[in-house]
Amino acid sequence: MLEISDLTVTYRTASYEVPALRGVDLSVAPGRSLGIAGESGCGKSTLVGAVLRLLPRTATATGRILFEGEDVLEMSWGRLRAVRWAGASIVFQGAMHSLNPVQRIGGQIAEPILLHEKATEAAARRRVGELLEQVGLPAARANAHPHELSGGQRQRVMIAMALACSPRLIIADEPTTALDVMIQAQVLTLLQNLVASRGLGLVMISHDLSVLSSVCDDLAVMYAGRVVENGPAAEVFTDPRHPYSEALAAAFPVIGDPRSRRNPRGLAGDPPDPALLPGGCAFHPRCPVALPECATADIALWRVDPFRSAACVRVRPVASARSEEAPV
Image (tube, rainbow, N blue to C red; front, side, top):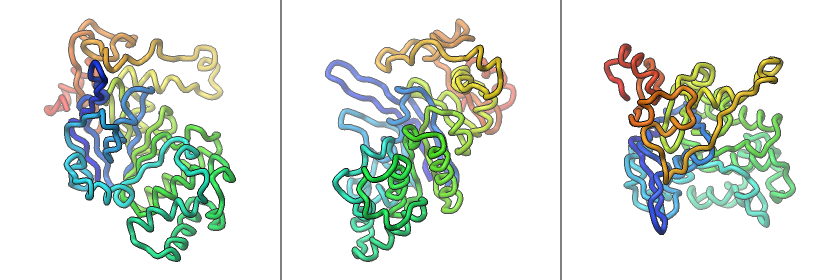
């Protein structure tokens, strides 16, 4: 459904260029969900924005983004407008910032239906009621304004809008960040059920590896504009092979474990400035197990096993012994 190959995105400023993505390769199959994790500034939102060419004019993208066989970067504006909403749609972080506060939610959900499907107003209203019920809201809430809904209800409205034109791919950019734990669980369950029942493709961004490992089939960990590890989500979370993935997973305390409470683990320092990336592996200044080679060698993704890859010199000998196709 979605295949991203060697994607590079660079932002132009008045005095220099900033590499936001550096040779990213990812794919999503129908009925599968891909989680993308990493700290702020690692390129997650740039990646999903590039999928539908929603980047600012200062951005230059190269590589390939194939959506159902068509290269999004080569599409005409007319074809791109047809793909947005009807082919792929995005659920943004913070529903209140995405909804028009002076319009009723029913009209906002109906707008893409009227525009893309040329439906009558009566048919659009019926469709709005069906969509609201699918996301667990009464059809009567179509008459409400955004401020009359709770945070979880507004996020459900955003999901209903994303489903309005029956897209094949949904991109969710931190859809549960502003929600409490109980509502977050409900929204995540809703997304899982939609992927399973409709055979959709789902790309979900989050800082929370535990959320992604419980919701997504596959997981890609990004650092400094690159994928540093990918594979089955549960395995990447429970048995990470890249030191950065391990640090992200270790940031979550084990409930009931006194050792976890008394000795919380974290990761010192901050992600590098994309305009001032260190030589070699970009993670090496923060890596607790860095080798001298890490400061000079530009480490590529290496196959750890048939389903997993990691960009770390420490997995390279293992990868070379197991696969003739390493690096990936």
